[in-house]
Image 1: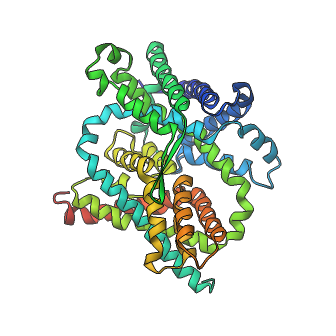
Image 2: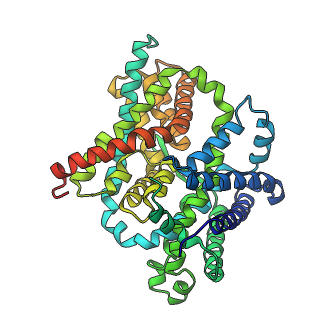
Length: 154
Length: 286
């Protein structure tokens, strides 16, 4: 029951279309941006997403599709990119936060698969999270302090 | 690591052939959750030096969990018929695909700032490695608490969206690593701004320079960075507030750009190695 190309490609294309529709609706409800205004940018975003998923599957680098999508978006919107203006004017109506809501809705539904194990972890993972936050802050501050003093900036 | 078996298993649930009703149930539920979450909108409440920020994504994950077959579905059979276990399985795979628009938006947010990144200089780039401090504090604590491979997902970084995407794509959201990263992600979503709001206000006590602390505030989340640097600026008198905010924002921008590569090429291999060394010592049987 494997998902072979080109079945894989048609499946992810369908899923991206559905996600785009949901995102554009949320973009309208939450931020008042008309779906007609957001549609061209959403289409561009979905096409980049499609290409990235294919790259993530077929290139045998250790890169996830997420990284390809970020890099493509980054390169297209660089100041010296000939298409920067077009890309930004198209994608701006699609709000950053509007893209996060469907993700977390799917995430929430999928958590149902592991509610039991989440219950066992609950308070422990909160402690780990606080350690992670503290660790990144202290680590970054110490390295920054060392380099800034070495450079004579402080 | 392009292992064919797991990849097939990962993508299998999204096949549409003969499963249209199941797909309809899944996406209609997500559409409904999205509309409700966006209709409620963003709200922020002041609490001490920080803020509690409630965003639509937070309501979406809570409603999603509540509706799933193993929570409210257990008590409401008719709900379980719609939001079944299969819906949860499809959703786990859809997660990877639904992250694509966010990834593109990340790229188009950082791209226009390219010139600022270059002028910010190498100090910002090296400072990026300081984020690995997470591993050395969170991993031992997680192991002492008795967590197993959850410690890898939870201890590798502060688990913002990019990390969440990499871990869930590599290990799967249903794996122990996926549970770990999700737990830290959710904790950060709920408590992150208030926690960093407090840290930013208290940090000058350490005696470190406000500029170094400002760079530490930029750890990959715009809302946490804002909370951290605003309260730091309020608490420091020796450096102008604007300079603190600029250093924090630039550092945050760089983390957004480089964080994913530090994660893939340094942090994940490092924490996996440390786990294999430390687990027999701290966590008992390996």
